[in-house]
Length: 346
Image (tube, rainbow, N blue to C red; front, side, top):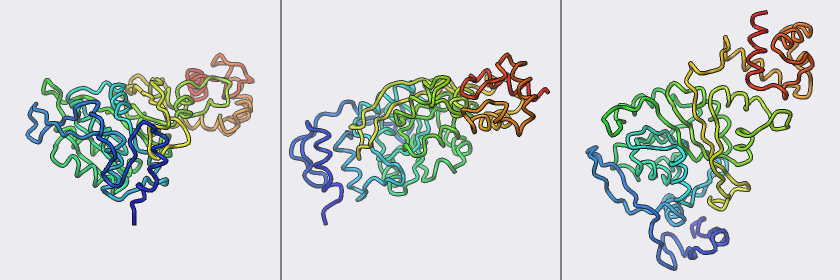
């Protein structure tokens, strides 16, 4: 029986018209182009010497890796594999990954981004839910101590415990352990919001989170404006815990299988706990924000009635320097902070 990937590759050839036609597992009609960069890694001896793996993380290498496990990307896991090594390079550059950095990668897939992270001198903790892909990445980097692969669901794993273990071996060029880790990942689109909610409050252990997301979601998270249909509690959450920045767009043709939408890279520079907006309780604050948006078009004196009476809400709004007729879509993060603190004091 022919490989499933083999039967689908003519479609991929349409997406990449300049690429040679794939002609069976691991065989191509024309020579592979030269790699865009030298693939290097840190040896088990932890020396500064790099070894050249001569691996090409591009169109061919990705399909070959999938064929080696007889795998087809699973829709249920939101799997779309990167076919362009230049995008991985740009993703790592956006995070300014340096020698000795400790990086968490969620969903490494075939290990193409992992390879670029290693080439940048990082120690990588790769967390992969799919056992087949976890096995593939483990095998690929089995000769390296600077890569640890966990076969787990990131949304359910104890990241602090795992990170503490891996950080014991992570040192920068000065021989000093990095104070904060980074997250660099080509995320499955279907878990992006959940992962962001889990990561952003971790400013005590992560300095930066750089993610490849669905472009529409990326724009909504970074550039959403007041009084717009895209303004939601997640915008308040993101700006409470981080300073987000849209980096660059990644066309859908860079992925296999090709998704229906383009992607984009976003950097979230995490705030340290001492820099969070001054609220007495983050849990209480976000509970109020979520309730406020339950009736987005309604006035806050209606949506927050379970917190206190309409009259008290109106008085709190005025005390916070806001109109008594305010709606949630009209309030900035600072406005919500002032309102919350006024209500708590009342």
